[in-house]
Length: 91
Image 1 (cartoon, one colour):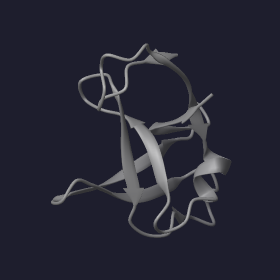
Image 2 (cartoon, helix red, strand yellow):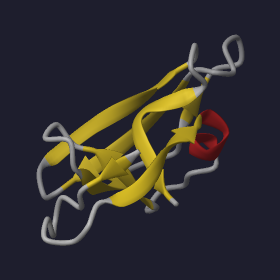
Image 3 (cartoon, one colour):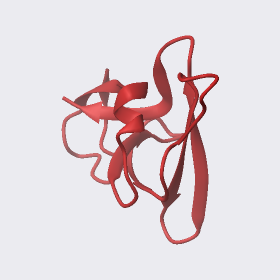
């Protein structure tokens, strides 16, 4: 998929793909990842803790994140698709 950079919209759209659940499990505190913002552009998030996993459901993953100074949240996996909710990887 092609998305505009949310910080510099004058540049050409860049190519991205959805992050897989296995890639999300490998994330660590302090890693910076790209995500799809509500306005449809690519933005950067900081992983704010270890990915949370479950023994009974290995496809279920939750990743805490921080965006900006005051915004925090959690991204969840979509087990049916095998991908994360909004996380993307630049090609």
